[in-house]
Length: 136
Image (cartoon, rainbow, N blue to C red):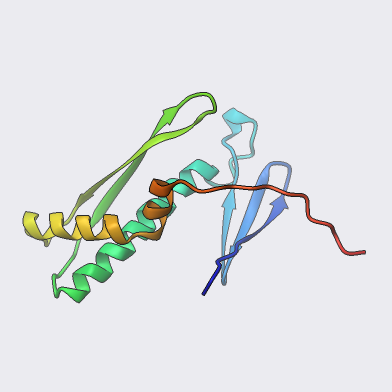
């Protein structure tokens, strides 16, 4: 697989619906920021993507090492930077009810190295927006 693609369409005045395989995710701004609060903001979904990728990598690492993981929790926090407003840092805090601390620390290290989203953010990435020509 050389690419992943997600399609989004407008839903109402301020929301977008992302189609991801057979799933949909609604994204919007809170009403306090001029949105209709139909779903999380893009920044929130970015943090959820970081956490989801990180944890799925951690679970795979645990399975490969026969380390049982139950009751895993991960808090993902983005700290803002200005000009332009963006995340200047993202922090993940992981707990696990069933893992000894040394095993969890090792799994966190493996997941940190193996997570596609974390690796992408750490290396930086070019983002280019263009106007597509509609057929017709």
